[in-house]
Image (cartoon, rainbow, N blue to C red; front, side, top):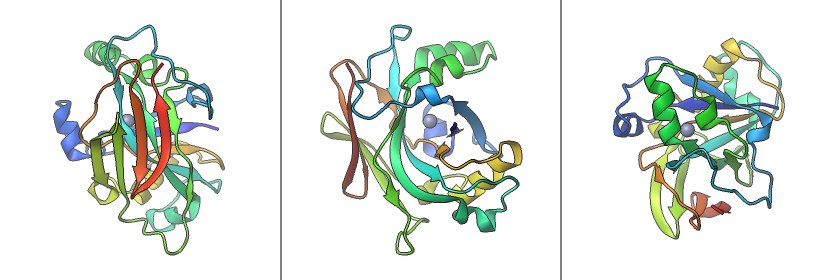
Length: 203
Ligand code: ZN
């Protein structure tokens, strides 16, 4: 199982971090060890002083494939949820400045929080998914999947040109504006529409 993530997939988020709008999806990965297991606490990592939350729609891959065309992409995932791409922003800024890979800042243990999955039924509107994140009960991120620069289907097409998709892989589709810091004691709760799909406390 692997976790594939898209960076800079919402224009207002690219802007808030001072990044340009990409003309091709920005892709990075997290290993299996990055997945926060259910009912396991998330501990503030010791190597950062600026931990950021990034709430994102997450897809669950349900079919093996490579060179998947956009028009067939919807056959390759069967469930969606929201998750958090935890980021050590100070470390990431340092690595970016040096032109080095991001993994230490993005792919560390437990850096991927994944909520309860909602099955994608024929009634489920894949093109318009409202999602949001509350921090300590206050809304800090809110967006609709239609605001993505690269749609879910385009992302799947692009990723599969480089990496085989396998059943059980997870795809983080990028975060909208509103990312910010969290500290010990904060509680983060993610929603699709009005359905709460995860709640995680930073210990
Ligand atoms: Zn992200």
